[in-house]
Amino acid sequence: MEFYSKAPELMKAVYGLGNAVNECGLEKGLLHLIKLRASQINGCSFCVDMHSREARQDGETEQRLYLVVAWKESPLFTTRERAAFAWTEAVTRIADAGVSDQLYEETRKHFSEEEMTKLTVALGMINVWNRLCVSFHAIHPVESAKAA
Image (cartoon, rainbow, N blue to C red; front, side, top):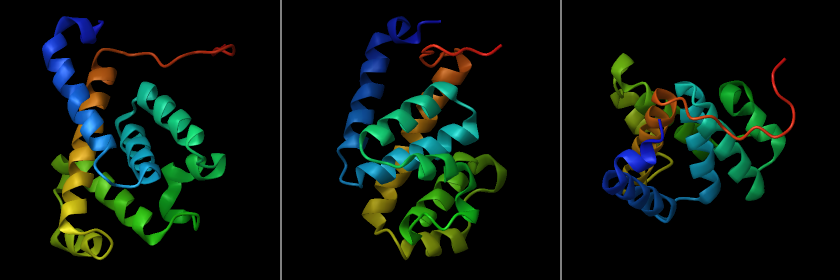
């Protein structure tokens, strides 16, 4: 389903919040990484493709993008990025276990309360996009090679 055209006023608001998130003051690279990680968790191929492409365009390395899915085992990420990934996983999977006081305190070591609010809104936003794209089977661009 082409959901953009089915509820244009609502989608206009979704785009508006997305633009506000992108301009909220958090590092652009960090936003790419958390959007990519949430999209991986949610199995959103459209968003994984889009956010990995955007991150590369903004200078992110291929190796770090490949390793986002295994960030806990990779030394390539800063402590701030690691805190953001842990927060991303808890917020994206909030129904599983909520967000612990321990995780909140650990995240506060790397983000101010204002930044945590912005980070959480950014995660809410990508989770909205993931739910739209996965629910309505949005297909990422396919260049030349297709599955056999």
